[in-house]
Amino acid sequence: MKIKAISQLIQGESLTPLKENKDYLTAFACDLMSDCLAFINDPNCILITGLVNEQSLRTAEMLDIDCIIFVRGKLIPKEIIELGKKHSLTLISTKLTLFEVSGILYQAGIRPLQIR
Amino acid sequence: MTVSFEFAVYHEDYHNAGVASSEIKKYLTQIGLDPQLIRRIVICSYEAEMNVVIHSYGGKMVLLIDDNEIRLEIADKGPGIPNIELAMQEGYSTAPLSARERGFGAGMGLPNMKKNADVFEIASSPQGTVVKLAWVII
Ligand SMILES: Nc1ncnc2c1ncn2[C@@H]1O[C@H](COP(=O)(O)OP(=O)(O)OP(=O)(O)O)[C@@H](O)[C@H]1O
Ligand SMILES: [Mg+2]
Image (cartoon, rainbow over all chains, first blue to last red; front, side, top):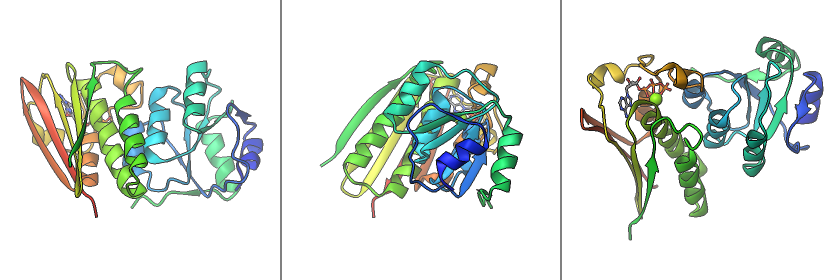
């Protein structure tokens, strides 16, 4: 699914330029970064999280993930957006909750990761 | 020929936590290492870096690269791990609130390093903890 369509479905606000042509098939929703580091096995997956700081961006960077959706309308500091741009991450913010975003994307066909 | 890099890591410096691992990733990408291998290395590197930031008084990370092996040694200045067997268990964590608020403290770091490294060694005393990791370049 294209990121623009995903962003529209969740009433997202793009904080960095979107990679228009990239397709995403899976997502992982989590506020625990060491769980992300332990379980995310697909670099083409979207990270959905309420954790807004350097650590969530660094975690994505290490995992080769290039798209993060920040939920619950968290304020996103300028430095975080700049760091995201520096590492060519797509950052999207939405007022919806983690549960709502996950539900909407699941219904739209985005699949969970197979972690076992 | 062996190439080596050293990075200092500071206690509770959450702002810069991950910079060393980011530099390591950049370098390994530059030299054209397999992306899958890079991923395994930097997952370990970042977990280890965060452990020094969260649990230690500070320390350093040394990356050594030669033709057939990548080594990463993380050494800190204490206070050490009293029970390594316990610390290696998934879910065991003594992380303070400051670390949990930043998405760490699931007790997954050490087991995940063991999983992602070809060689994993850990030794600890009140003077410090040393984690030695290595990967074979195929
Ligand atoms: N460098 C260190 N110095 C002192 N204690 C450490 C160090 N590294 C790990 N520990 C101890 O071992 C425990 C387990 O470490 P581990 O990395 O597996 O989990 P964590 O850091 O608590 O959480 P996570 O890694 O999931 O964020 C820590 O909670 C801490 O008690
Ligand atoms: Mg840890």
